[in-house]
Image (cartoon, rainbow, N blue to C red; front, side):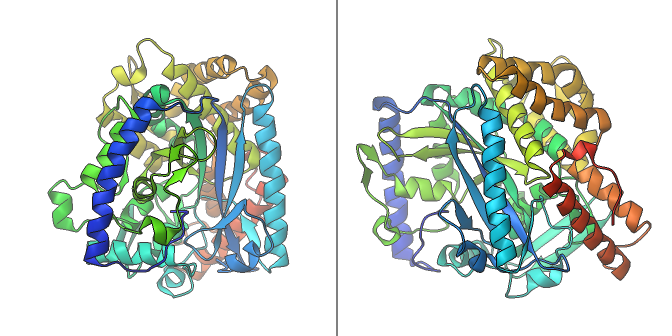
Amino acid sequence: MGDAISSESYTPRQRTTYRRRLDHELERFDRHLQDAQFVNHGTIGLELELNLVNDTMQPHPNNQAVLELLDSEYQSEIGAYNVEMNHPPLDIQGQGLAELAEGVEKRLARVRQAAEDAGSHLAMIGTLPTMTSQFLDSDEWMTQENRYAGLNNSILESRGELVKIDLRRDEKYTHYFETVAPESTCTSMQLHLQVAPDRFADAWNASQAIAGIQVALSANSPLFLGHKLWHESRIPVFKQSIDTRTKELINQGVRPRVWFGERWITSVFDLFEENVRYFSPLLPEGRADAGAPFMNGDNPGLHYLNLHNGTIWRWNRPIYDPAGELSHIRVENRLLPAGPTVKDIVADAALYYGLVKVLSDQTRPVWSRLSFEAANRNFLAGAKDGIDAEVEWPTLKTIGVRELVDKYLLDLAHDGLRSLDVDESCAEEYLGIIEGRVRTGQNGATWQLAALNRVAPDTKALTKERADGLARVLRQYMKNSQAGAPVHTWTLEVE
């Protein structure tokens, strides 16, 4: 979805041509996997989506003015009140995690200054608690670029009906939207892990197995459009926002484009093959129209396969990148929310990379003893109940996430980081932050809910009292976030 898109709509001939070339490129990819050498450095990377707000803490559709003050490491997102920051790849061994923290801090400072210069403020959070249905129903929400208009049009044409958001937990929210605007509220932190093709399946399976643990520990989106809903409401909101299925297609078992998956895999090819088999192209943009090369040196560009992959939103997405002397394959771990602080982000990264390493190297891996259906249930439980969720785990049956991490997974993650030659000081610092969350039971979601209950107790959604409380909570959250102390240490003092 980062490629240039030339049109907001497409003809049947364009769609037919695209499908034929997509099938051809799938076979080309298979041959490339069999015959070519790939990068095998095991580098890590990160993308971070950010929100812009105005002085009253409302979403500020000002990303074009902000981006004019920045370089190519920063990009637009579908929401006109969002910008994306990209951290270049680096090695994790030694002080790699500390280097990641320093790099994110520097880039955040740069975009924060640009936002202030353009008349906005920066919020690093999973979902803006001050977002309103009225703003998303307006024409202001979308960035004015063909790729976003084309995506919106294609999803609505495929669906043929309005977008329904229907969520409930402590409170209930239901609303019909005429666009995919709710998707823009889902700001994430995405971790990259480059792996050799023959190790990809293990890394992806491990990522899927721990997805419920990750989202539970790091939940930071409990307040969707002023309502107290899932602790990580991004997960169901994202799925419902860009669902191309009508109710009848859901009942027939048609797969959603925002997808956890349905099986453990044996090769990266499995995922690309599923993409082509199960999902029709949303943006059938020709290679020449997009300005994409047929070859990148000796590597096939695979424009059609990659663009199609970018319109199927797996929570752990496979990425083929032809850039450089050799192609590379990576896992894009997409399920975590942005924020609350840089230290929290790098702690999440340390836990993810450590666990994926150690679980991938096990002779009897966790996915051989945990059903894929159980992994999916764990994912949904973690998103709904956050750090207090209960999950299924081999030999332990049903167990609370906090107990599972404290007694079992933290030690495993530490072993994984040692195997990756991460300095002991880095491992202890960042996994210590995860331990702090587990011991206190406080992450971004629980802090937001507790802070709101403190400043606006017993208020109902959509009241002025609730709205004023949400603005106060967000303002304090932003101060705490910029101060940098990890979220488990935050007090409930709200100015």
